[in-house]
Length: 114
Image (cartoon, rainbow, N blue to C red; front, side, top):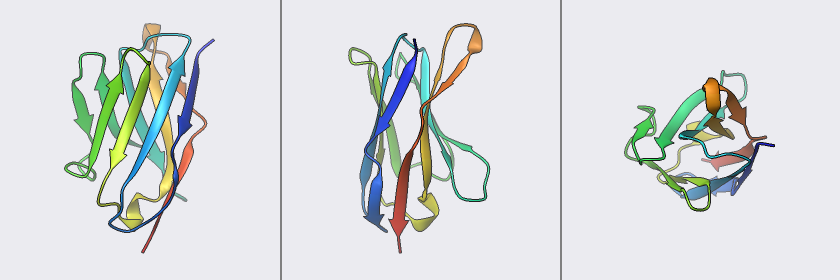
């Protein structure tokens, strides 16, 4: 059974840093990533990474966020620096499995105070 479990969210002041993690079980996923959903807004892509280490970022986080993964631990990380109040959202881990099936974690809340 596939499970994605996020951790590491919390409250941070603007300009601060935070790292969120997602531990996957049940399968190895070629593509894993992070999405976020702010109150009243649609869920949006933040960053993705392949097993080979190729990454993709939303323009709004380029230069501030870094996605990485530990394939041995089946875990993906999102290091967030220079956080802004606009980064406040629930951050969801995403993994794409066989046949393009999307799996989601339950989310972890990141709140950036001004």
